Image 1: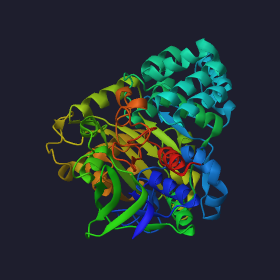
Image 2: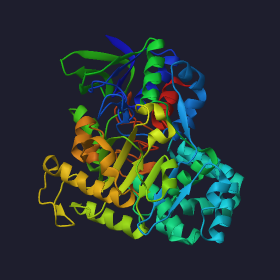
Image 3: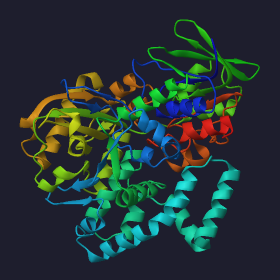
Length: 519
């Protein structure tokens, strides 16, 4: 068989790329090693029948605001895509009591600031955000080439002047702690916003991390948050239906074992049963960099690129705890029952300590918890009166050298998984006393379980590669190839490991496909 384009992996970026290419008249075929498509964007009954859990990604706001969705919103809706908006996107709880949270209603958020100076700052940031969002969004939504970067810089200068552009560059380079402490006075605000940096491997003192708390805070305040109706899998299902409606094919339980190269050009893929399928125009691989290296049996032909793939750095791991509950968590602060996300990360110093322990190979004494409450937003995910809880435990080592608390002796995740999940649950109980009595069932996946489920999540790194400055922008994944190209002609690397990185925006897949299709 031959197709115009073959896509390796059925993650979000692959599906968006395949959908756009199919809409542009290309014949496309997607091969996926797992039993179902979606990568990190899928929904399964992991605990009990009728309880629908997002296996990894839950927040679909980036996709709802993406260029791909803007182009294909009506078509995706016709294939069943539906969002559930969250009126109260996120909050942080604190051990001494109280919380701080961001709600879609500005006045509600402003009323939560303990320091009036911070409320004034927030109000001014919200007013300035539309203009800044256009510039930052333009940067994140453009190919990362010197020419494109120069164009974005020129547009920023015209929109904001020299001083305003310099301020934006400074924000892009700042650490979360530096930006937060110079912008706000209340440590609770620092912690609430700083927790978003930990989603992308940005501990408080790492340069380049400030922009993510800034964007999450302002986007949630100005535009709100959405999750998938009945689960994030609604997005995957709609994309697959869109591809198939245009004649595209998706084959699951089918692993690509080699990308075949002839005369420096990718011409076909070899499947696990030995079948060779040819690609007339392009192969798009949605894989981690080391995964691409394994598929190129003879290398890319460029020693510098191959070395870049080999040294590509992944962030710390994550544990996922999925709970079926007979009631919402009994938070000490009852208002937390209204929020889509609750972070347990009470200070910047706490986050920095957890990150340091994890990077040293230690099980953190007390981890960071990202507690998703999807049934608060979308009750259809569980039987009537019941709930699901989605808990990310961050940041964790893939390889365990010891336990910072000195209580867990094992160093094998298969051995210590449930014990560490118990530690996370005990921490959560401090903020929601009596939660354990409401747990009907739980499903735990360690960092290595996540990688076994999805090889792109190397070591349980759910963002497929650190976003530190030396591995972002022009350097993601390798200098000179931040435009999804590789040294092999007609072979393109897309997905979270490529520019513009992780998230549910489908940006790399859509931009690469747009470049290939010429429209």
